[in-house]
Image (cartoon, rainbow, N blue to C red; front, side, top):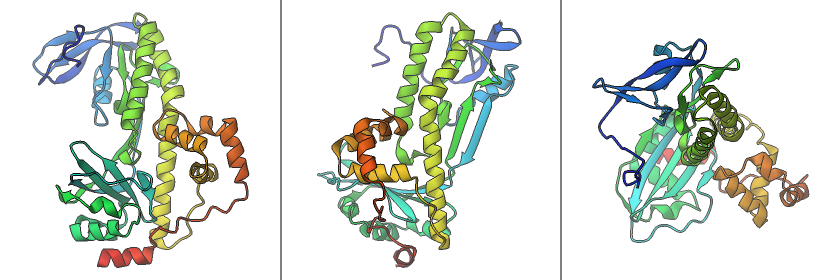
Length: 339
């Protein structure tokens, strides 16, 4: 579709080597006027957009262009993912949430296309015993112990158990101490900030961020300083909260997994989110709000402020939030891993 658009040119097989800079729009701040490819070709532009994803080298390019370093925060999420793909004539019926915490691990069941689907178990990368999940028999034994997901095994495996670890959460900001580090340049989606893939938010956040970029570009494409400042402000206010909420949720979940492994008391859950989960099984308005949160259509604080949702949560004040009886404790988990 992009290639058929009259105002879009796609160049395949061409790699960018560095940024080209020209006359500054802000004294002392480099201004990007295009890119130089590995072949030496120069491609000029009013705005260069970095959509290169979580491994974008743009920060190095910006520093090489004479700029001060952008803000960059990075940390390993400390999750390890074990995934197997399946195929069959009928995709499994969903009996629970796509992402379900099971104590020492969480299980993620996802529909694919062409009659395929996947099952992912993810856990703390510090838990060495869980590495046994690489074994297909062990993987299937653990999934079979999950009552709402066991039937997802009823297909033809089309891959071995695939391991992914070392996934970095990263956040970048291109305005430092109130001053843009560069103009004529914008990072969008995962090139701006990325989290672990367990919540599947990359596409949703990317689409939201692309809309912010489009709207700011419409207003300020001819004013590089105004564009850089407003894009930073709109990114922080409209998109940043989704990143920070996910980081907070990830840190809480990994702390819970590590405590369970060590036999220590589990940190108390976020009381509001815990009540939202309970209420979502009882009230359609709350359920819709939870779906909006998951799909990055609304922030938790916005959903909680809705009168109908607030009233439902108030009903749960003092309600005992019992743990899920299907959660697998550490002793049973050891037995499943050991066969």
